[in-house]
Length: 109
Length: 115
Image (cartoon, one colour):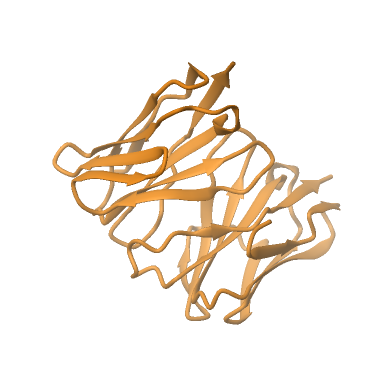
């Protein structure tokens, strides 16, 4: 079967660092993507990991461990505009992107 | 602003109506998707078109009928919907799904209410 786990909600203060974890179980696996969605908006692509290790894009980094079926999104120097939902999304062997239940990040002043 | 355009933004329809949702992209992407999203839930995949051919149908009821007239356009025809079908319908596009790291570009969605 397929399953995805990520925390439902995370709260942090402006300027801090936050890590959103994701564990997955899929039928085959090609890579792990992360998407951000503000309330009322469209999901937007943040990052993709196909291989183990850390990918860095500005304030956001994403990590993957294929052997542990685990990844995380790291957000640094948090800003108020980072308040949004964050979805991990593994791609399975049929090239389907499966969205996790989402983590709602609230950044406080 | 997104590069995937969906119309209409909002749609209210009765259970006996027939309506269509439209999606357009001009990024040269050859894969297009329909997702359904309920409030505070993740997007759920409905259909995938690759090179204008239906490649994935996630066991969606036949009251939803997708159509891909050309590589830039994607429609979702709606007929005899139920109130529980009320949701945000998102269109997305990407390079063909075999390009593993090709991100999905989403439109802003059509907010559908079935009365």
